[in-house]
Amino acid sequence: MTRVAVGCSDYPSLQARIADYARDGEVRFTTRFRPKRADELLGGKLHFIVKHMLVGRVEILRFDDRADGRVDIVCVADLERVQPTPKRAHQGWRYLAAADAPQAIDDNSADGDLPPELYRELAELSLI
Image (cartoon, rainbow, N blue to C red):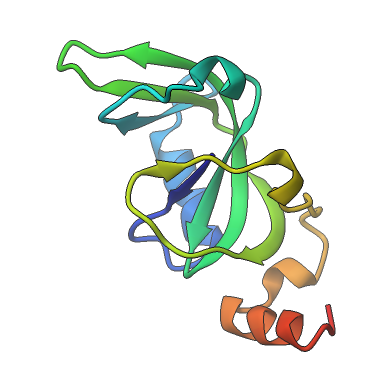
């Protein structure tokens, strides 16, 4: 599943936001509707889009109904960095096929430190 990280300018700001909202090793993201394929998503990943690039993901633990009719997507509060991958922004969330999901990268990789615009240009030239 993909979701835009509104207000985040880069991976470190997304990482800081998730750390700020984390409680007991979990973080919640509110949505208006329960995904129709919610059972398939359990144990899967929620990928975040920052500046038209997929940059990180968290594992989906469960979906909790709220008193106000909305649904919380409850995830592990451990953000995993992924190979920056171009992805158009959208409203709400979208499904992401496993075949289209970016590869994880370790935090010591230099690729993750590139600005998204530079990474996009290098990828378009097939240099990375």
